[in-house]
Image 1: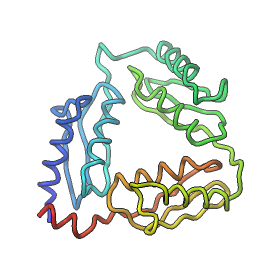
Image 2 (image 1 turned 180 degrees about the vertical axis):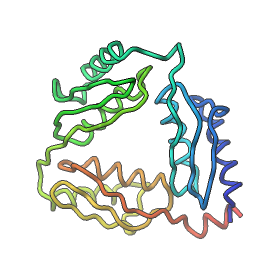
Image 3 (image 1 turned 30 degrees about the vertical axis):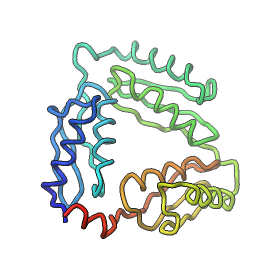
Image 4 (image 1 turned 90 degrees about the vertical axis):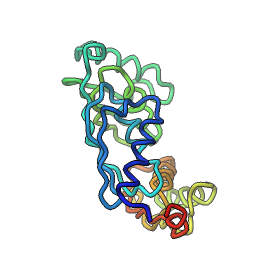
Length: 226
């Protein structure tokens, strides 16, 4: 069975392999396959890429991202300049309905508000600004208005799970009520868990996803890594 020390080495290797991350600025600790990332980076994009790289290492059960975004002289922007860049990015993002989302900026942190009809539109608004230079963090307070019944939501998600090559639909139970989806069961990896959550969010009418899935790597995977 892989030890926490071995898993730490695998994560460090994954960070070194990610071209958008300066691994020298990031520390990694592992306890019972739960990973904590620490350090300082200059952009929110690099923070996100580090978390993404760590979460895709097999046998990682969860990632706590404590990396601080600290823009340097080259990446620092004033709030007015950043607010203008954010407004332009939202306007240029085709997935975000015109005038549906508003943004406020305070000390590099961006708060998004407004109402949209789909979860992908909410995600697209955040994604459009997350990689802008100078953004230190994003608070996504955009509201999704449900437009379909809970039964339709549940059936849509279950069909999506069955279609997916990355998700073992037999191990996941879906419950839906008033736009809230609850996922329970077990998955083999954080990647499968993320795919299940992404598929749930993609269903029309979903306003929130309560992810209660437990990561339980298969015994065969443990044996391969011994």
